[in-house]
Image (cartoon, rainbow, N blue to C red; front, side, top):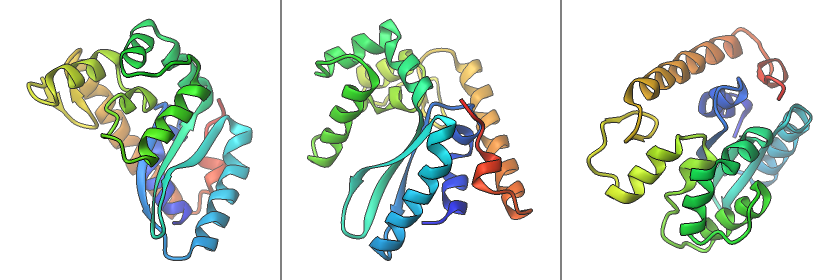
Length: 183
């Protein structure tokens, strides 16, 4: 894993447009992977972000980059709390919810569809996905849309534009530190 990989998969989160990004990573050398993770967090944590492996296997990881303040705000929304409660999350707050999500992912339970709440997806879209089992969406982009289609399409475009811009800036020499907007 490299800084380029993080930027390519999580630019909207780095830019402050998105609560979180989830992406897989191949681990070729575990020591190098852990070193990159630690170095990235040295830059990210003071700016209000964290990069965590939600699932870690011998040769691959599922990484989650998130903004702590945004996640706390998103999970405190009434509709989000209701979705999490119905899904069996017993304790409120982003830390207990994140621990439970990590436990579910690591135990190989059924994929937790409420994960969209941790990525900043609108609660009505997360609820629609769960209710309709991923079918009958109005639109599909970064997530399946069941609520405000126009707002979702605007966000999809913003994320795409941000990612292209961040990748260009990285090619021109921008560092992770320069590309991370403080919370």
